[in-house]
Length: 168
Image 1 (cartoon, rainbow, N blue to C red):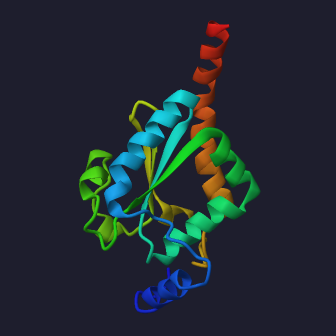
Image 2: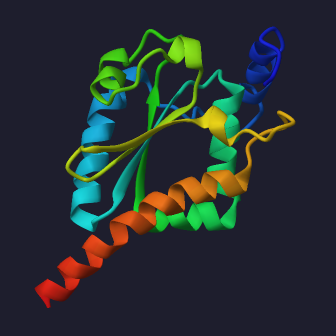
């Protein structure tokens, strides 16, 4: 991991790059954003990926980079997931939402933390994104991220196919 003294400075640099935008929306938008993602997931028979993090967090932005720049991951997210970002700010925002989804102790474990939900809101898995880090600490293993996402996307596929067959 990045030294705790250096990380805030790197985050400030990333946030102030021309053209960069806030990844995590204002904290007040978390609950409505999750409700909308669940509604879209239900309508399209997809899973919901909830990403708890903060705009100052270098690791959060690094995971987002993996989501958007790895072709296989980007396509899998587009096809099988509704992704919603929940801003925890300085670990004081949206803790009630995190608690409802079984996420506790973010200040100790760090962020980002991922939660996969079924369209009905059932928690499938919670994952500390630190589990995706390369052994040398140089970033995330894209292969580990892809395996995690594929595992759940594939697990939800048989039910989806059987409903299609039954319906016509």
